[in-house]
Image (cartoon, rainbow over all chains, first blue to last red; front, side, top):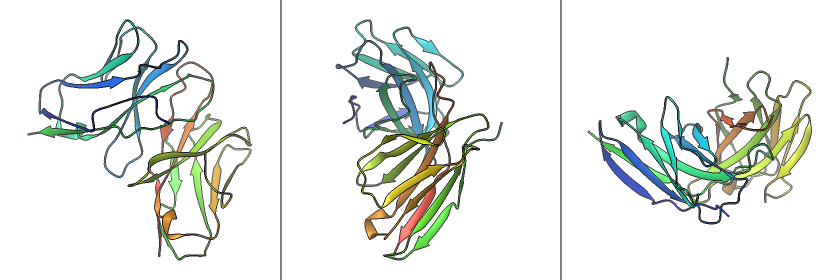
Length: 111
Length: 114
């Protein structure tokens, strides 16, 4: 079973920051938080991952709470092309490549 | 660097037939995983191969099988197709070297069983 809880859908105005929350209250000390997104009918795309420090790359920022029980993916300036299902996943990096996907959050970017 | 490629992209079969799907990982990646995606069940893990050995297996019947070749290319086979096997089949590759071994997904093969 997926170890994360996400809202089923969210709306965000184009050009604004999209903040996608994720709860992972049972996360273990050696588990990372990963984010993927899937644009309609395409394969999932890796976005970012982190352990306990906040992370930023060219696509997004990942903010992990101090107790690591929740995190937020931030898309700083959402565009229509960011419309997708976003999956938050916890897994032990390097141990195996099995990903347990939950239902994800369907993000709608509004023009 | 070329991404993960999957062939064919679309496939139509009838019940009872068998099908073979192919996946070529990113150059240098030795791990290949397969997933099934349906509207009802979402994305589900099928199996993972690393260096020609199956390392992980999901909860699918024995009709679903796979293999990996010495060049890391992988195939999955579904025998005695059922209507419920209609799905998008995704392949993902990773370097599996430890920290940061994110998986890179291919575009998928959409299988329709009539």
